[in-house]
Image (cartoon, rainbow, N blue to C red; front, side, top):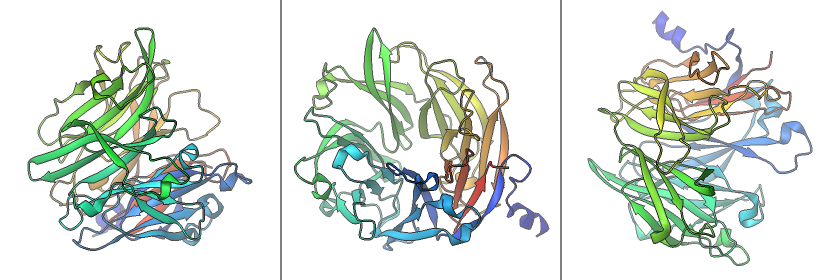
Length: 425
């Protein structure tokens, strides 16, 4: 029992990250940073959204909102927390919609997952133009009862009409059977497309991407390409897509090409998430990828070759040995990872990495051992260990109070809390 109690205590003290406190948040899952336009105060630059979800079939879930948490770093339990939206079905990762999509502040909220009664998901737009009365509009028409769930949304003009469209992946999973699609929903335009339901779907490919995506601009053969990297967790595929259309349009599938980067994971390993960032500071973008596993998950980097279309993606393992302790079928570790700098003004060196342990019940950060671009060695630091039968959600990191130091919020799904930390002395 003493060992268990020790494991339940935050472990970040003395490692450069200072524990601030916690606030109740039932079944806290995916957090997402939200940057406010034109803040009048440094502590009003960021808020964050947090999806919550219960595994109980036919129950409904909430999207929470934490307004200006930088104002409450000395009183985490007193943070301004509110229910932004109710009635969702296992909501996944919320995401800020670029201001130029609708002309007002908004979130995209995908939902749905494996649990019967919650497997009919969709993508909703949450209109935040009136913060006291947010409005939700389902752009995917879940009323058709298509049993698909969604994880993340990216915004790009697919058809050249000047309106940004919603790119996403959907999936239906029944045992070993997977039906998934990489696709985009056409922005209908008009006076207020964010309030228009049932956008027209357009399938790019099937049974490749089923969860996460990331976008970048890459050069090859003397030409720039706006590319989309896709993650197939259930399909066990990691791919890249690009269009050869001279106007960068994605509405003609005959002009869209793709390339499988990796599909050779062992045993129960699955591609989980990807961030596009220059990890080793050699002036070239890399792919920071988490590989989720029941027994031996890892944090890896793929170097993007000179020609992303044909070259070899060399993999480097930054850390491994992560495993599920939740006791849940299909549980794995690690979860999602993201880069940051502990002091936001000192960002010329290699980035640091924040990573959720997911079903391991842990959270970590990693610091570079050397600034040599040929070195891929990172030192692991344990932030917290909640012990067996615990799940940790997706954390969020930013300088929330404007003091020049990064702050971290970690959702504890099983425990029902969000914990706050800071790199400030």
